[in-house]
Length: 154
Image (tube, rainbow, N blue to C red):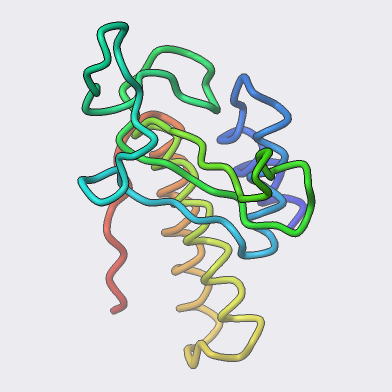
């Protein structure tokens, strides 16, 4: 696991907002991260212009801390108060497509590794190895800004 962290996870999560990045990594490890597309049903937190009209999507990515169209949002579900707003609710962070792809590829790898650890994957070692490598490839692709490739079980 140390090698996967050093070669894949830390480089792909080299975002400007270091504090939020560390919260995201801890949340992925504990399986408490929520990422969803911003749509009609959840645009109540969308940004407003000076004349009061709503913009379709927020324009600043919380992880990159730069101007990007953010079609996704994430929430780090935790019991710690570091992530709660003044109302005691978990805070939503707007993220760009680039950040979303990076986060979801790492989540996919962690989910698969959890399944292997729990004994839910009934494949031989060689097949498990190649499934892990496909997920590592997707992490590398997302680091370069590409969308991940769908993984099909052979």
